[in-house]
Length: 100
Ligand SMILES: [Zn+2]
Image: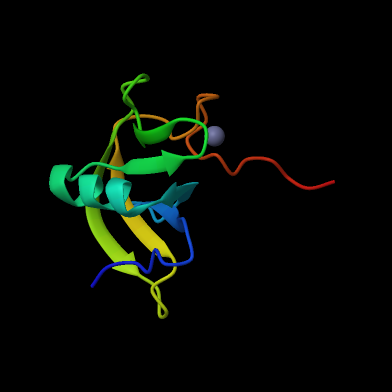
Protein backbone atom coordinates (compact mmCIF):
# COMPACT_ATOMS: atom_id res chain seq x y z
CA UNK A 1 0.00 0.00 0.00
CA UNK A 2 1.21 3.51 -0.82
CA UNK A 3 -0.03 6.99 0.08
CA UNK A 4 -2.39 8.65 -2.40
CA UNK A 5 -0.31 11.38 -4.04
CA UNK A 6 -3.02 12.22 -6.61
CA UNK A 7 -4.02 15.40 -4.73
CA UNK A 8 -0.46 16.56 -4.07
CA UNK A 9 1.83 16.38 -1.07
CA UNK A 10 0.93 14.06 1.79
CA UNK A 11 1.62 15.17 5.40
CA UNK A 12 3.73 12.90 7.58
CA UNK A 13 3.49 13.03 11.37
CA UNK A 14 6.84 12.01 12.82
CA UNK A 15 6.74 10.30 16.19
CA UNK A 16 9.49 8.95 18.44
CA UNK A 17 8.98 5.18 18.29
CA UNK A 18 10.27 4.67 21.83
CA UNK A 19 8.58 7.50 23.72
CA UNK A 20 5.53 8.24 21.58
CA UNK A 21 6.42 11.93 21.53
CA UNK A 22 5.31 13.80 18.39
CA UNK A 23 8.45 15.35 16.90
CA UNK A 24 7.57 17.19 13.70
CA UNK A 25 5.40 17.34 10.63
CA UNK A 26 6.81 16.96 7.15
CA UNK A 27 5.46 16.51 3.65
CA UNK A 28 5.98 13.65 1.25
CA UNK A 29 5.78 13.28 -2.48
CA UNK A 30 6.33 10.04 -4.34
CA UNK A 31 10.10 10.55 -4.58
CA UNK A 32 10.65 11.24 -0.87
CA UNK A 33 8.33 8.35 0.06
CA UNK A 34 10.34 5.98 -2.14
CA UNK A 35 13.63 7.26 -0.76
CA UNK A 36 12.40 6.79 2.80
CA UNK A 37 11.41 3.20 2.01
CA UNK A 38 14.72 2.45 0.29
CA UNK A 39 17.04 3.96 2.88
CA UNK A 40 15.14 3.38 6.14
CA UNK A 41 15.67 7.04 7.00
CA UNK A 42 13.28 9.97 6.94
CA UNK A 43 13.16 12.00 3.71
CA UNK A 44 10.70 14.76 2.88
CA UNK A 45 9.70 17.12 0.13
CA UNK A 46 9.84 20.85 0.64
CA UNK A 47 8.43 23.34 -1.86
CA UNK A 48 11.56 25.44 -1.44
CA UNK A 49 14.25 22.75 -1.22
CA UNK A 50 12.69 19.83 -3.08
CA UNK A 51 13.88 16.41 -1.91
CA UNK A 52 15.72 16.53 1.42
CA UNK A 53 16.83 14.12 4.06
CA UNK A 54 16.09 14.98 7.66
CA UNK A 55 19.45 15.55 9.37
CA UNK A 56 21.52 15.67 6.18
CA UNK A 57 23.14 18.92 7.34
CA UNK A 58 22.63 18.74 11.13
CA UNK A 59 23.52 15.07 11.51
CA UNK A 60 20.22 14.53 13.30
CA UNK A 61 18.95 11.87 10.96
CA UNK A 62 15.95 9.68 11.75
CA UNK A 63 15.93 5.93 11.50
CA UNK A 64 12.46 4.81 10.42
CA UNK A 65 11.17 2.00 12.61
CA UNK A 66 7.67 1.77 11.21
CA UNK A 67 5.47 3.43 8.61
CA UNK A 68 1.68 3.57 8.83
CA UNK A 69 -0.88 5.02 6.44
CA UNK A 70 -4.12 6.51 7.67
CA UNK A 71 -7.59 5.18 6.78
CA UNK A 72 -7.90 7.00 3.45
CA UNK A 73 -4.19 6.92 2.60
CA UNK A 74 -3.69 10.68 2.62
CA UNK A 75 -1.55 10.96 5.74
CA UNK A 76 1.48 9.07 6.96
CA UNK A 77 2.72 8.24 10.44
CA UNK A 78 6.49 7.79 10.65
CA UNK A 79 7.68 6.13 13.82
CA UNK A 80 11.39 6.87 14.15
CA UNK A 81 14.51 6.72 16.28
CA UNK A 82 16.02 10.20 16.02
CA UNK A 83 19.80 10.66 16.20
CA UNK A 84 19.28 14.05 17.87
CA UNK A 85 16.79 16.89 18.25
CA UNK A 86 14.07 16.99 15.59
CA UNK A 87 13.92 20.77 15.52
CA UNK A 88 16.47 23.12 13.95
CA UNK A 89 16.25 25.19 17.17
CA UNK A 90 17.73 22.28 19.11
CA UNK A 91 14.42 21.35 20.73
CA UNK A 92 13.56 17.67 20.93
CA UNK A 93 10.21 18.35 19.23
CA UNK A 94 9.12 21.15 16.91
CA UNK A 95 5.86 21.43 18.84
CA UNK A 96 6.99 23.60 21.78
CA UNK A 97 5.04 26.81 21.05
CA UNK A 98 1.87 27.36 23.00
CA UNK A 99 -0.88 29.50 21.50
CA UNK A 100 -1.71 32.92 22.95
ZN1 LIG B 1 11.36 22.71 14.33
